[in-house]
Length: 109
Length: 112
Image 1 (cartoon, rainbow over the protein chains, first blue to last red):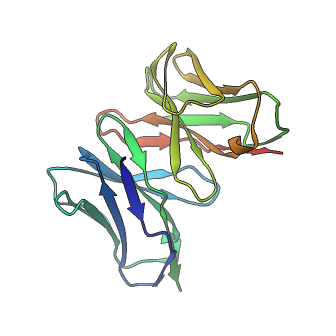
Image 2 (tube, one colour; image 1 turned 90 degrees about the horizontal axis):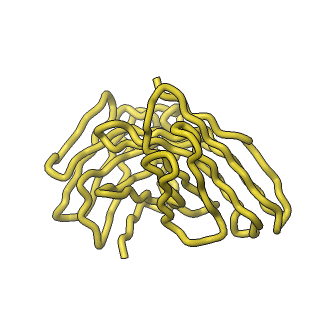
């Protein structure tokens, strides 16, 4: 069955450093991959979409890579700030979309 | 711009009681709408999606049902709640073209 894996452990990063989150998947060939941010008690917020024929996408301090051979996406936040602390969800889509469980990120001041 | 409303924000219901959660959207017409559940320690689980009035697709067979009586209204229901129905229920609409999901504020349901 289709499976998405994100770091189950929380990630602690010092302010100003680059945070890198990983999303691995199996038994799936998605047409696109998305990243969302979710704050406690709130609904997820869409951040970025990258298609299967794209290697990299950037938006301000965010960068996403998509390696369909490794079946992996990396999500980078450069110059991280305490306000970036949240849970980040990876989602894969084709005709349907499936979400990973998310990784909690803590940016330490 | 698109806005999604959900109510109630929180709900505590006893096992065996009925449920009705409502989602309404503004700023768009004929949206694809979704109901998700997020249980503690688990990912977002797609429950239902709808591409139009009266058109419902179920992803997970269980004691929940959904209806779409109007273009911008999506309702999640249950006749008898189970303890396992506890969770954070999110309504979402699909963005045009890019397949991104826009989520509402959610309803926190606790079944006791």
